[in-house]
Image 1: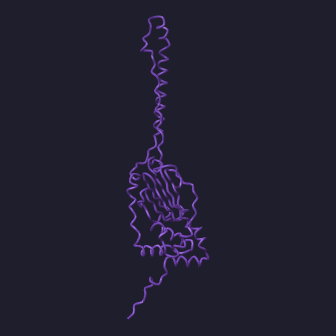
Image 2: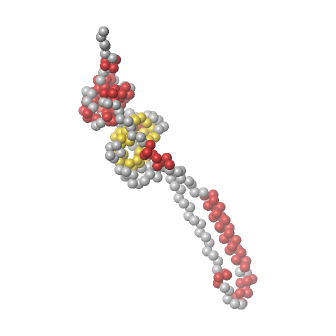
Image 3: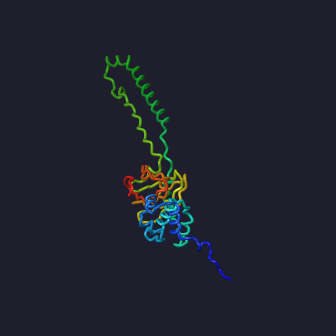
Amino acid sequence: MSIGNSPEDDRPSIGRALQQARIAAGLTVEEVSGSTRVRIPLVHAIEEDDFSLCGGDVYARGHIRSFARVVSVDPEPLVQQYDAEHGGRPAPTPAAPLFEAERIRSDPRRPNWTAAMVAAIVAVVGFAGFTLFNGDDDGPGATQLAEGSTPDTATTTKPAPTKPADPKPVPSESAIAAAPRDKVTVKLSATGGKSWISAKDHNGRLLFDGLLTEGQSKTFTDGERIDLVLGNAGSIELFVNGKKVEDQFEPGQVERLSYTKGDPEAG
């Protein structure tokens, strides 16, 4: 009794599958490189199943996804094949502790302008009534005092009007705008479709590695720097230190970005 090969043994390698799809799509290596922003030598290496130039498993998965989308191939089976051949993907670091401060921060309350206006009106009316009352007393009584003794200064001195307290400024309602100045805060929102993202802190510790579906958001904070890899960057709306990054990313584009505590300029 002979044992045949399983279907998985007959499937082509990752690089061979991508190369065949590229040729079937009528694309050159240079065209794939231009669409994915992956360097030409790296495209050749991937087609030869050499992922040592990718810089790690996270970047290798991103390159495979970008390559597959350009040549119209479903990237997920290829990524799963990569994980099976390279020991599987690491479990992402739970991101929940990073957002604890943001969750427990209470919503800022607006000043009660109605109460402040009522108090100011009452103060003005009271002061006007007090002035009018003293003015009536200064009529006949003033003539008698002029003819007699000098009036007591304490009884004729009018109190200075009370100055209404300056209204407190309205606090910002944005949790990101209230982020500490001594840290870098990055918020990503998937507004134009799903996007694979990877985020690391300044020590290279993986904060998140996964898929962000449309409508989802992630926020990352670090004391020095946040490093990002965005797959399908055109679907991401990006805020850094409370400011929106206005760069126009293209759909299917892979971007590698770094941000620090300064202005939101890509590193």
